[in-house]
Length: 182
Image 1 (cartoon, helix red, strand yellow):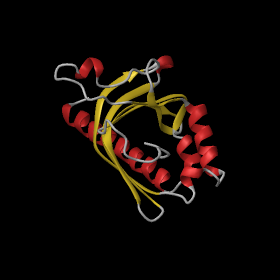
Image 2 (cartoon, helix red, strand yellow; image 1 turned 180 degrees about the vertical axis):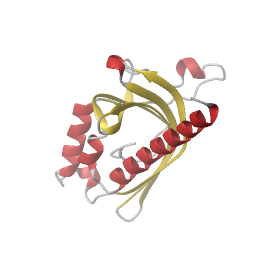
Image 3 (cartoon, one colour; image 1 turned 45 degrees about the vertical axis):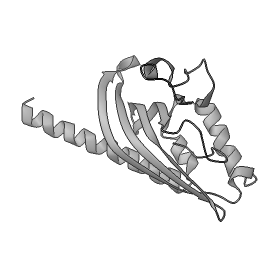
């Protein structure tokens, strides 16, 4: 493959991944949660650590809680995400009655790595930035800003999220609850 074909393939892959994220955001904004769950692999890991304010030089070691070891906002798999969706869909979830109005903005999508996973399946490491806006009742407004590092896995039905690490830029969560998906 020549350099021009390689560059075109990279651009096409970039566009394909961006389209995947835009579709995911639309599903979440439209509360089509079951369809969103279909974008996740059965073995997905979904992790949002607690962020700490630490001294200069300690960021790598101590800024984020550790997956599987420390407390976290989310440390979930497909089963618990499915349970959260089922709870919201009951219509009697206290934090989502009335329903929130939510918008997901995804930007700065960068393909950071390209690998072959188990069984020869193609996987990508993708970084992105997000802003999630939520408004509820008359006066509850929350804005969540941060970055995600995803492991996307190619399937027969397109790309699926096999792992997601969500880093909020807030160390203290100011929202009254955390019912949105990132």
